[in-house]
Amino acid sequence: MKRTVNKENWWENAVAYQIYPRSFQDTNGDGIGDLQGIIKRLPYLSELGVDIIWICPIYSSPNDDNGYDISDYQNIQKEYGTMEDFDELLNKAHGLNIRVIMDLVINHTSSAHPWFIESRSSRVNPKRDWYIWKDGKDNKEPNNWESIFGGSAWEYDEHTKQYFLHVFGKTMPDINWENEQVKKAVFDMVCWWLDKGIDGFRVDAISHIKKPDFEDMPNPKKKRYVPSFEKHMNQPGIIKLLKELKDNAFSKYNIFTVAEANGVRTEEIDDWVSQENGIFDSLFQFDHLNLWNVEVEKEKIPLKKMKQALSKWQKVTKKDGNVALVMENHDLTRSINRFGSPDKYWKESAKCLAMMFFFQKGVPFIYQGQEIGMLNADYTSHLDFRDEPPLVSYEKRIKKGMSKEESFWILKNTTRDNSRTPMQWDDSRHSGFTTGSPWMKVNQNYNWLNVKGQEQDEYSILNFYKKIIKLRKSTPAFVYGKYKLILKDNEQIYAYTREYEGECYLILCNVSNQYSKSELPFDISKGELLLGNYKKIDTKENILKPYECRAYKLT
Ligand code: GLC
Ligand code: CA
Image 1 (spheres, rainbow, N blue to C red):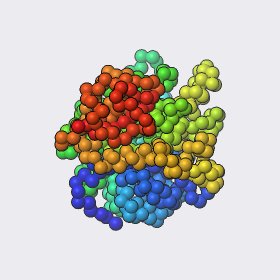
Image 2 (cartoon, rainbow, N blue to C red):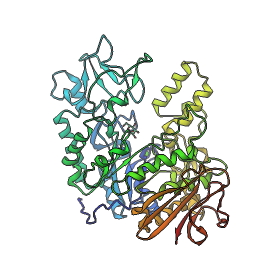
Image 3 (cartoon, protein in one colour):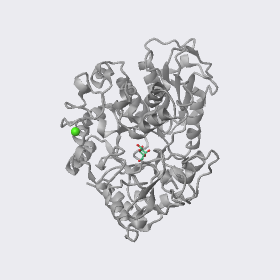
Image 4 (cartoon, helix red, strand yellow):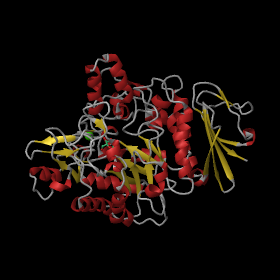
């Protein structure tokens, strides 16, 4: 099944689509999305115009973190189907010119992985050192690190009387990347998938694999556990480990790899994603998405900050390197709720945000449902939510004295479940996602917000996405052109140009619910309007309506 691709960097002008399989399409009525469901929807994805699908983890897993806790890398989770289903999916996707990239979770495994079961069986087991085991200190954990999912980053093992490290959940022990054998086992597994003919990986939490030391975090506030990112996120020595991953696996194949790269700085772009030295082809950076902390600020973030956060990555990838362009994923709330107008200007703001990010330099990723403007979960009780870490925080806040209402408000505005509600395919019961009872409730707005309805509406968000995908793919300037931010200090308008081989394109987005006047350095009345989101536009006055966006070819 191995395929060879001639063109170098086949992924450069690609558009990617992220699938959260659990919530995409169920075909056997158990209320859980499955591989046959993805197969069923391949024609939809092909019609949309995507070139790559990234499938979130579908490997065997106890599902404590919906598959990010893997117990067998080389098997398919039963509820998703079989390896035959996967092979069928891969073949059919390739038949439609859609490449498939898998989620690669190698910072940790599940505690149910045979490697870990052996490792925990005794202190002298040959796989003991495949994970990170330490003695306690004064009858407590080896240090004061807090896990990203809350609580201590260490879990005590009664049987061998030592603690193991878990940067994420307590059933997700971190692999010891200093051990040669476990690395070899990981690289072999990576090559096994690549030999099967998949087209690359989205590499999960990869900036966490290096832990240079296990000292306590400074603790001036005398907290029991302290957030410990400075100890395990993008730490010195990581590049050496990543090079081994590249040399022993990635570099042998013509694939596309994109790293989830929390904590990586623009100065480090060369090591991470340059053509020559880069470990990966692209990376997810979250600077623009981390700006808004709803727990602290109820107001949405100023647009200027967003422009700065995105533009600094555009700047460093000007000549070389590549970032993934992303507004949503399975760990975030929906972008319209975050940055747009979920009620009055739902449609306008969905399109405006789409245009804003889509024509920048990089590989655009669309997260399932984003292309129809899906919104945050509309649940009214915390019992409807499924993702555990935010629920634990919800209870904790109440215990500390916060009112239930306020704690629920924070939960609702932060939980990862917001993007994990079932895909809204049509207006039949459970939105066409399942004929059974969905593992997570469908948003009630599926009655009017669904794929089927939007396919029939020329001006729908879905059809707008189809247009921007086409436009991007047929315009080299959007792939290779120079990015220039204009109207830098404007608080409402995000505007930029892309210039390539004598052609110049202008993207103009009024990311606000106000009318905004733009003082542009060009005469756009002479430009060619390629796409907009209002039927009637006023080019003379340069007034942009609420959430109006336009793409021009300038002359
Ligand atoms: C990444 C994934 C997230 C998961 C975590 C641990 O951040 O996107 O969903 O919980 O890694 O694997
Ligand atoms: Ca199913």
